[in-house]
Length: 187
Image (cartoon, rainbow, N blue to C red):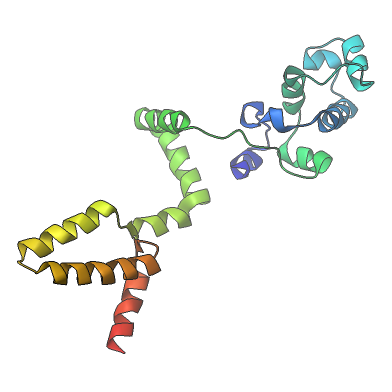
């Protein structure tokens, strides 16, 4: 996820799960941003309030932290904290919004495809050449065997061997393991 943000060199507070950032880290981030020359008014707060926060008299609120994060890059966050910010998990609704926008907006679709290719290309290509066998597939196999007039004993034996083979393959078929299986049978 952060690969995309790092490319753009921005910190989007809406992508950060700020509830996972403890007060000591929040304070360090605030100090870093202030040392960069960001004024309390740039953050939307007055000097007195920021003074109290810096002295530990007030907590760094979620709102203040969001304002601070707007002045940081991911690299700066890592420099101050020592790890990447905790990501706010995407939901199925987020996926639907992105797909819906991509269907309506050709420019957005190009950008989406570019990022999917860049960050998930190998995974997508691997998935497109694999098939996960479901219980419905096995039930269909049984129906085909019965329609061919196979005995129940033969069907049970076929199922036993089929399930054993699929178990070895994690119920996922792809050209390579299937080809390897045929080679074992021939050899």
